[in-house]
Length: 182
View (tube, one colour):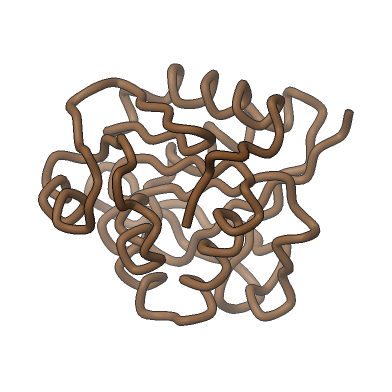
């Protein structure tokens, strides 16, 4: 069955954390839209420098959670910080939890989950430097390659992408998770 997946990102996303999940989703025969704050392109970050630009498929103010089966949140230091400043981005993320749909976040990507107020009692992982932010938001943080908690998939860094991609697809195939909470 064809699935539609939203990948929420803006300038400064870690290139591999968008490119690898997007390619893996498309290998499943699914559609993976890059959703961003503005139209045009967004610029990736790789090895401490700006890298390739990626085309934005859908502008956030025209995106609707109802059009998607799941959400992916790539990391990078800059990307999540810019997104969490935007109420529309935070609300978009929260809407996936309200609809009990799978959400996958890697590296610094889980930072926006703090602002969406969806971490209370959830098991997660992330890049080590944001673990206290997640714990302070009520999450149970662990240092693992990939953590799955009722439709929420999290990983630590680009080295974890193979496990992250596999678990992300498993959760999307399962569909809505009744215990996915806000």
